[in-house]
Length: 291
Image (cartoon, rainbow, N blue to C red; front, top):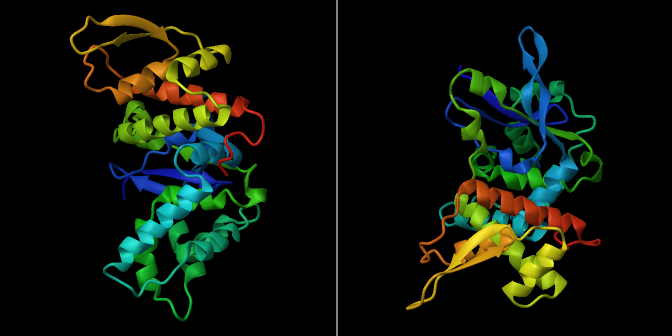
């Protein structure tokens, strides 16, 4: 049977993995989300180390890390378009999917409601999407292959879901020896690079700052220290040392991979992204306007 790793919303399991086949949800949780989370066993429920945050906190991260409403819709429609290249039997719109997902009331949904689907949330969703005109088996393949973050982001658009707890039950997989804590926390480097680049650009545009030196000074004025060494290199010239805020130093390292005087560790990329997210939280409403 194997060892499972579960992501739940209000104690309803909405995504799972097993043994070596799992999707990391670590990036969904803000720093400090470590918690003892309820984990179900045959003998009953026990508290085990894992991660917990409100869906509102998860929504903020989704919106600013590639899954705003517009980005989520575009990802879904691209997935449908690619699917229909080889199978035009599938006819589904994002609006229909979105309405179906936001129609699920997690505040009252119980484990018994998912029992007919052997507690597989995907099959529960498929049943709600199925119509007399739509083949359930085509839907099954489609939903099983859908980026789960799209599903989760649509669940965020129901207002009474937002204060419900999202929990990632990880300890069983660690205790069984399938993963280490470091495995669970590893970042998708290319995705982080893309998101960091977008965040820098969006913040600059929002506050109306031209030029990276001015942006570095603005970040410093927001409380970020200029403490990250960066070596600037010019063709035919000698390298020069600078000390910058971490986000600007990381931005330079991303945009100048040819400059071998600097390295960009994953942890530095992660920390810088978190600093930028904190900056966004400090902006007056509506922030960057990413709904």
